[in-house]
Amino acid sequence: MIKLKSIIQQLKEKEASDLIQQFRESKAEKYLTLFSHYRDNKLSDEEIQTLLDVNTNAYYTLKSRLFDKIQEFLSNNLDSPVIDLLRKVANIPNLVYNTHRDTAIAILLKLEAELKDYDMPYELSSVYNALKKLSLHSPKYYEYTQAYNRHVAYTLALDKAEDLLANFSKALSEYHASKNKETIELLAMIKEQVGHTARLYESHHLQVYKCIIDISFALFVPNAAAVKDDEPVEDLLAKMEKIFLAYPKDTNYQHLNLAYNFLAFEYYHQLKLYKKEAKYFDVVNENLQSFLLFNHCAYTSRFLVSKMERYIMNDMEKSLYEENAALQDNYEPEKHDIPNYINYMKYLSVSSFYAKKYQEAVGLLSRLVNDVSFKNYPHAEIEIKLLLALFYSMINKYDPANSLMRSVARKVRESEDEIGYENAGIFNKILSLQMSSSAKDVEQKIKQQFQRFEMLNNGSNRMLEFLKFDDAFIKHLSQGVKTN
Image (tube, rainbow, N blue to C red; front, top):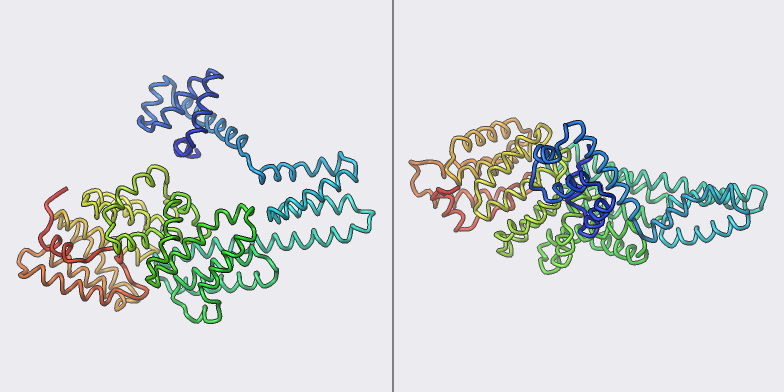
């Protein structure tokens, strides 16, 4: 069953009130009751079923039919110039079979101009296909046939590029959770394929996809050889911006503008140009719920990690928790997208940690550990277990903390890059010191170990960069925290 409750909760107020009015006018009391309670989100399914006085099968049928009605309502209320154009494209068979040839061609040529204006190459193929049928005995037949063939080939190339971008985004997030060096080779291969496809056609769409991949590769993939002949990141960003300005009606670009702002923010964030990154950060942060859905074209959850770093740098980390209330109400993470789900839950738990809600932080990470398998993501497993051990130690629950630390030690020993995880070993020592009842000068020793951790915590195996290891935190940790 489609997640009906989630869909109802995400409806805009106007849409919800229109549906409620529709149910009232048609006297559909059961639909209205189910809809209203799903909208309020206060009662469980079992409680709503009891309230409606229906059996399980009838309740399931009611939910299914309510979904159908909402789906029909939403599709009927889509209204934009693009939707109008799509309706015209859908009417092309009627033009071919049931309209005077001259009239049909005139309408199709007008539609061709409108589709070019909105930059809709897929739909243009349908127009050229119709024009060549209507011009079979005309000198124009060859021209329209060539146009049709070009657009079919181009749209196939565009489909391929979009698939490659999606696979690149997926592999990029998986690399950051696993640090598997073989994934770097896959990412480089996808980058090369998109570059080859973009060279075949003079297409701004392909150039935008190539820019997204080239910038993401430069920012997030440790492979200098693969980017040595690329344009500078700043030039690639400028190229994307220029294309977006040239095609303001392109609905794809209206959304991909968020991906552009994300990449610009990450670029200036890495350069530590914090004032310059601010305007790009604000655009993405204000549209965070939408941006997190872009996992098919960007490594979206990386923004959450960088956001934590930015807030720490600005001494704003305590405000994360309050900000996240709206996000959690309106966004549901996709658990099957394990790398992005890990970052999302990590972000929520760290936000709870900075709000000193340690028990809540423990609960979020414990849920994460139970929800996903870390089999293919050893780097993420080491980081999450160290973080969870820290949270347990902050509430003096040392048995589960010790268990997690032993698990991390085993995972590091099993790693092919054990030396590269010396940072994890140092963090384990910090936690051991915090939990030791016999250690002397704990605060000073923890401070020294944190200095070692920060010195070693760089390169591809960097982790826990969103923790603020200042004197106040070290003092807090060394004293232990007796709170829930």
